[in-house]
Length: 484
Image 1 (cartoon, one colour):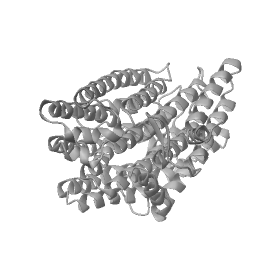
Image 2 (cartoon, rainbow, N blue to C red):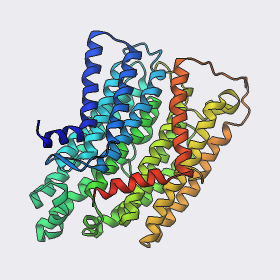
Image 3 (spheres, rainbow, N blue to C red):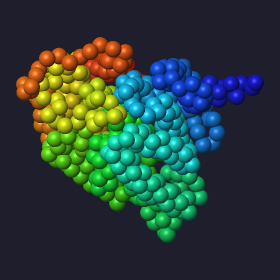
């Protein structure tokens, strides 16, 4: 075996381990259905993938379509860790499911594999391949509880709008290719800059359509209407995975492809995206104020969060690039923890999730351990100090102020102030008395231990990332050094 092949196999180990997990899970399902064994195997696969990402390696080009560097390894480790946490939450959620349960883990592995391909993509072909692998798997995960109407409705909506966004992306890339003759990320920026006349107009139109497709995936206003319905209908652990891994992978691949120069060449597109960012912050926060359904509240808040995340894409610079990766990691912790708390309170796949505001009244007295996780997660999303969420928003503000983007900076500050109200509202409800009983409801079992481990790990990451951010900031800096 040549040294080059050995280097490629070692670099591609996270992808290979995840793919091997998919094959093994399929074989186990065919031979002997065992919910616990398959959940354990899936968790082991994700842990091995995270370990493979932590091995120091040089940048390796697998093919002209894929590159494995520190940037890809950082994102792969993050998404594999999110997959492992999701397994712990899904295990309890499906414990009493009437139908087959094991296929959920197969879909989860496929979704993470698609996200990993996205992080390593250096060509539009691999971008679309990863995006569709992720999207098709997520469709099955959203609609998994077939005996309930809401998940099926959410799955249909996600299918239709995901197909529309992918078609828009394809058409946009087709126009870009027609104008430049290339879809390779590292040459596309220079070709866009060199274009003249009609070719330049076609390229800019294509670039705009690509951004429209990504805006659907990130649920930016006005392409956000699917978000609340899908989050409400999807199982709580799946909604958390959708919010973090799916959107995070899109943000990561955007950062690899769209640098500040490519946006600076299209000032009209930059202005349009700035309007989208401000509208997303405003609409997301104002709509969340009116929600009594917790999952819909978190859905609208996610629209605002990705409005914040769009700001560093617009301002550019080293601080802005750091802000994007730091925010993706912080948002993954906060959102998985929030939806994990909802999953811990929900009866499972055969019944509706605990997503009404009244379900959380008196939660501190009934489920103090869940409250001790849910409350910090909500405060972190509001940007309260000593949490990783505060530093994530500080990064974004620093990037905007550094480039004197005062309008965007003010939008972030005002949006965070509005968000503080509805997050605190949900926190306060947990400490109010609930008529009909305030006795503790926790019953220890294998399921509650699995959920407890997942929530405890997320809480530790939330607090440690807020009071000792140097390890995460250092990992972000090393990842971005690979991009040059």
